[in-house]
Length: 522
Length: 113
Image (cartoon, rainbow over all chains, first blue to last red; front, side, top):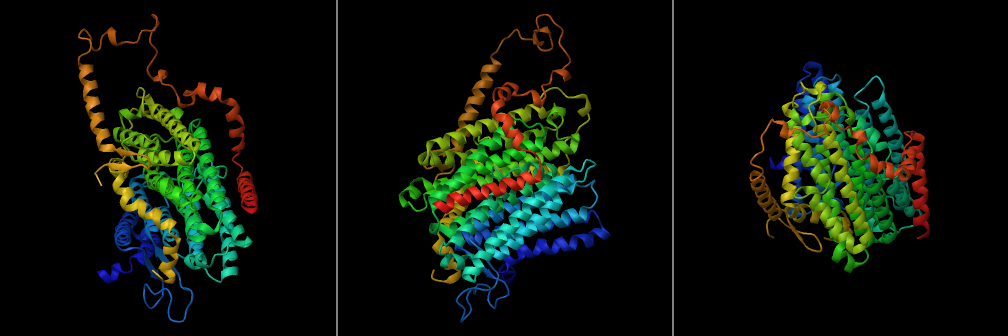
């Protein structure tokens, strides 16, 4: 058993990848079992991720060399730099891996009932498994070209999944096409940036490039390309416009995974800024760029959300707005990276707030999209103007929505409050105005979700929805699990911050440790 | 580390204490509510809305739709919303244009810094 667990980093990728290719074969014989196969595989992957997390958080980073004579041998005799594909899993990487594992598993569980009536399920689950594989790859790899490969797989599978639910009007296909165009642009830019690194340093391993980083003009160009396209893929304003299209047209469970996929791009942005460039770049300038992108995302996202009447578009704009909080928190940390006193005083806390918010957002936004999916499943519409009184018949969904809405609006004691409070207090010490904007955005978020709750759930039972029933058990189970996580994180935030978030932040900041894990010297 | 006590950078936050206080206040509110009007009778004319003598419309029609909520807010901020909504053209060429524009802006900022 222990020899199998030794290969857990590879298995996290291999299991969903193999299942993705096995799914269409199985689908030819028994259509119903493929949803269970996907759920089982992603459940197993979640267990493996938990195992890796325990290892990383107790014993430090894990290195896994693919095809090497020894798993941890990064520099065989005579080599000055690693040439093989290496997975470098530190606390930040596994933090993201945990989010992906939970979200992908619950998406599969939710889809059992949600997608039951659809055709082409073998393709759906294949794409879902490929998307999960690629997200794990993006988060665990220590090789920048390998990152690009997974980044591309994530884009291709996401595009196909966005366009999956075909309608006569063709809106999902249109959203998929738009997403494909922006994804292709971002992929090209990432590849170009990688070319610039490889041309200068003859290396693709992130730690190796970081150790010799000169911050030349070419490195500056690579940085600009990466910051722009990765923040676009994370959905930051003003490059956010693909987000409401893609999020609203994808099936609900996929939207939840897409949120986590966007966060994987956000993670890549942070990894590039901290682990690859770190203090070689002008941290104040780049930090402020990220902060401004964050503030724009927060404010414009929420103000556009408030005027939406399509429930999923409204939630998509909120996803943009919430990404702003993450950019703000981590941007402040980057801006004060070269100022040890400020970093110690509030920079690390701001980053903890931003990073904690990534996890919280994945949970409550996932839950909110699932409740939107539950409403669509029963009413057949996303238009809030056509809904009303659904709390009479969909009590569980209404309760889950209240939990998700309270969490996103930063109402105690839910998880969103804990991370937002850390952001408010730490960012206030950096610049009070930014903190005030963040609080204002929370108020508008609450107002927006009060509107959704009133429109969809409150009021008298409408004639057309009198026969509506609660959604099937698998959908309730997925929503209930997320609701429990939200409540637990809200009641015991210090456990998460101390044991998961703080190590993740320190792993990002400590570039020397990151490079030494691969090149030796620890 | 005390259970539930979160260090926020400038202070502390304890969700458990918040929940306990919320429960105590909730119990107090329920107690006050139960001490309400003794002459209140359910399902009588007392409970019907008073609309200056006009008959009450059907409940289904009285539900305020999503587009009508915050009408005053959006009307007051019309000058903010009009250009912002116009920017969201739904045209993928514009999406790509924003990426190029942002790249150019970041290029200038990082280039001169």
